[in-house]
Amino acid sequence: MKLRQPIITFMGHIDHGKTSLQDFIRQTSTAQQEAGKITQHIGCSNITLETVKKICGNLLDTLKLKLTIPGLLFIDSPGHAAFTSLRKRGGNLADIAILVIDINEGIMLQTLECIDILKQYKTPFIISLNKIDLIPGWQPKNIFLIQNIQSQSETIQKFLDTKLYELVGKLSELGFNAERFDRIEDHTKQIAIIPTSAKTGEGIQELLMVLTGLAQKFMEQSLNVNIDGNAKGTVLEVKEDKGIGKTMDVIIYDGTLKKNDVVVIGTLDEPIATKVKALLEPLPLKDISDKKTKFVNASKVSAATGIKISAPDIENVVAGMPLRSCMKNEIEKVKQEIKKEVEEVIIETDKEGIVIKADSLGSLEALIKLLKEKNIPVKRASIGSISKKDISDASINYEKDPLNSIILGFNVKLTPDIIAYQNVKVLTNNVIYKLIEDFEKYKEEEKQLLESHKIEFLVRPCKLQILKGYIFRQNNPAVVGVDVLEGKIKVDIPLMKKDGKKITEIKSIQENQKNINEAEKGKQVAISLPKVTVGRQINEGDILYSAVPEGDFMKLKELKGLLSEEEKSILKEIAEIMRKKNLVWGV
Image (cartoon, rainbow, N blue to C red; front, top):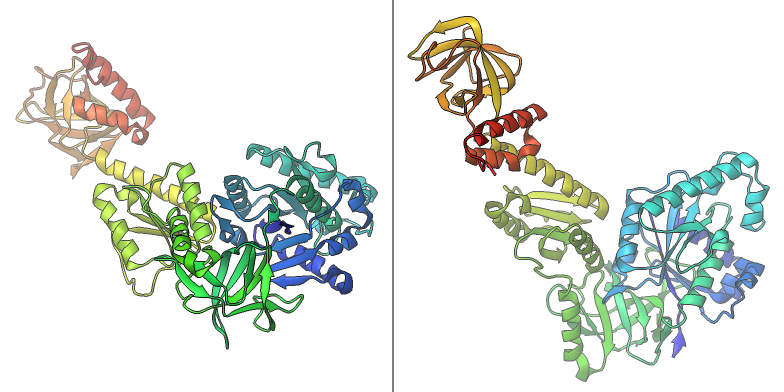
């Protein structure tokens, strides 16, 4: 058994300083390369314990721990992409996350999304409250952070505390107990906030100290791996490399992978088995994603590390897929295990529901979890661009439930062959949180639109009074002037008197001798009423109500959100009138 590096994922809103923080650490380490010997793989930096000790200096003594972890493995990617790609069965590969928040901007939409995802996977995290150098009047000093803060002016200290406790308050609303790192009483119950500056390096010593302490004290058991065992990994990216062909960037988190090993990898269809042609390591301090980076061949790599793998038949592999090395006689067994693991995510989850697409298996998993938390049913979930088949699947929902005729796409586009589509709403975004927000907003608007169509065919509540001195015709039909007291009158609505007896309906409405279809509260118009005679069934000054049928009344109660307060009040009056004859009318 061997103690591996904890895998640390940097997360946060765009431009809050995730990469800059790591850049500062790598630059610091570069100056002491002999001691540090940092190797960078796959958007990741292998920070050895010696490097951490060099940067932190005497600060590590305050931990009062015997440090046995070999170092820290940093993973970097925009927003949360690396985190969601770093999936493993039943959870996430990251041992700890660093949530980077700009002190001046605070929690942004993408920050909220990161917090939601961290909560889902129950991943411990700490917060780097970055860009303290941009606080107006801040004086950078090459001393320990707490001494540095205490040496700043009272105004700056107050500003820093205000920003910090605004963040503490917001995190509390989200269900987290947080505090500045030096005021933490219990690391298992509180989230540490470390003020930092990626520009000046202030707070970076303290950030590394807290990370190292947490990993050593609380994670030693989970960091034990069997380096003699088969390799387990997760695909971060599949891409075409000039002169090499298709390659995979992979994080190996358990065991050892050797050149010529057989590996089984998940795809959207059946898992594939292939042989490792080459293990390619970037030169020290070079990023694997940089086109200018040169690689060296490795014969084997052990957990935890990042590596570029060259292998045949990997065209159908996508980000987030599991990878396992095995003996030839174990291939079928491992294929079944991986197939089951992939199907747990890419499945037809509900009989009814929306269609969702995402760029990687991890992102898809995160999206499904967030939707299920909000009780949003998912009919089909898959990876890749939105295709004609997805449009077809979503359009089938239209007849049953138009509100499920929707496709949500995270970080994906439509395939070029889709020219037009009807009865399907496609929503895409590269922020899961915003995608779900857009979906909920659209669904609410669409629901109101559908309900407003339904209500158009119902007799709505209204109240009117026959004006004295405005009897234009006594019968066949009676034509009278009326004042619309409440609601809206329409052609063809039935009318009743205060005794609840339906007596007539509005045949036509005129305003200034012009025919109109409706008239709202405050209008005085002429209406024609068949089957009644003025002086018998109706008289000047009479108040009439719309004769709402009992069935319409029940439906109006369900759609009361679309009624005005006045209409609700008249509806109540109508119910009281009708219940004088029938106690259970409309109940």
